[in-house]
Image 1 (cartoon, rainbow, N blue to C red):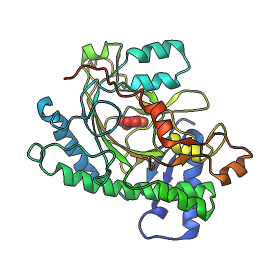
Image 2: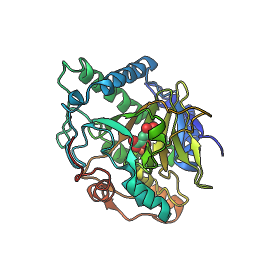
Image 3: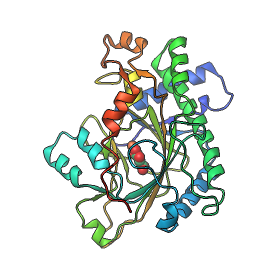
Length: 346
Ligand SMILES: O=C(O)CCC(=O)C(=O)O
Ligand SMILES: [Fe+2]
């Protein structure tokens, strides 16, 4: 396999309810995702114009002076995971090192600097993790635009969940449980700006865009503008496949949680995808790499929920590949490595 497979989810979008079309679409989605935990998704229903406006707002947001961006600072520590985090503050290499099996790669990741800045947004009613907004005069209209986008992305995520569930052949009760767990209050939009890189940046061995990692989500929807760099690992040989920007295509990757619900590994249905954002090799003689904007939407579950392989999947696979684990415990184990609490303040 040399490309990320594509699946069309339009059968799950809107009010359509054609059972045969849904079954075919679910099979296409499951067949795509079970290979490497990822797929390109068409027919997701998010209007191109709204997506375009979100990217143009991101350009304005990240183009603001640092002092202005720091008026919505991401608090120290991993939670609440909200607001603006300045360039080089997040250490995705620490997370990459958790999964890396090579000593030299672990050493490299320990020193890696993420050459990116981010702004995280959740649901307005999430009391555990309240949003951190910029004052409205700094970026007028930002808040209502993101609130609307959050709802639109939630609808896309719900369509994906229906497809993934049908592809897993679950009982109606199991579907109900999963729908309830995937509360619309828990998800997270991330606005990400990978900075342009000049000759010196490119020659700095420690500067990376985003280290190889798996997401601490149920599944993640990924939108990107024109610049590529997103890559998914081919589990068959360890190489990385480019997930190039294509009009109308969003990428989907399975995260830690859905992997466990689906009894995903080693041979189960939905393995979480190892992925990264690579610095694309420059053309001969070119000394810079352009900036890159991306917009992941992480679907999460309620913090109190247990995570365990669903009985239908255990029956189909003959055994449970995971012990049940609490969401909070899993989050602590994985996420605490990601955000520095010891880094100096701006
Ligand atoms: O920027 C991208 O395209 C991917 C981002 C990502 O994988 C993440 O934030 O977890
Ligand atoms: Fe990711």
